[in-house]
Image (cartoon, rainbow, N blue to C red):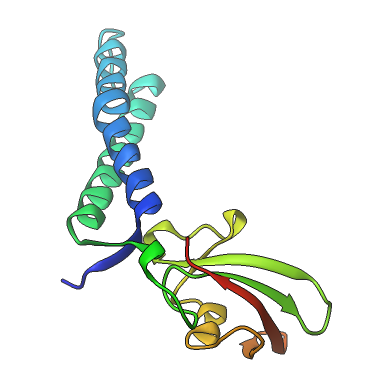
Length: 156
């Protein structure tokens, strides 16, 4: 399988979530299932079915996190410099609206657009790769082509 690029903070966050799921949430849902079983007939026991559904969700997320962490390629972003690449924190301005935004280019597993963590595979990130400060990146969006000027690039 292909390695999954992660920043150090991204790896730490996913690892902490995995530990939380295994040490806190999994035991809690097992207790909830046992409690619900004590209430008798399982066919009409909503608490039991809800707990089983939650258990399924937790187990699925644990498997997903174990897979990601097992394939993780943790990249020390502070050692990087130069043009935009994985791990760069890029300050942009939309050439049409003059709206400024700042994003860090990260792997798919840690992407969160609301937190400013942009998936490296997104159209915007792909347009930024290899560009330097002052360059304009042209991004094809469903609403048409948009231009973004790169104001700064940081690796921290």
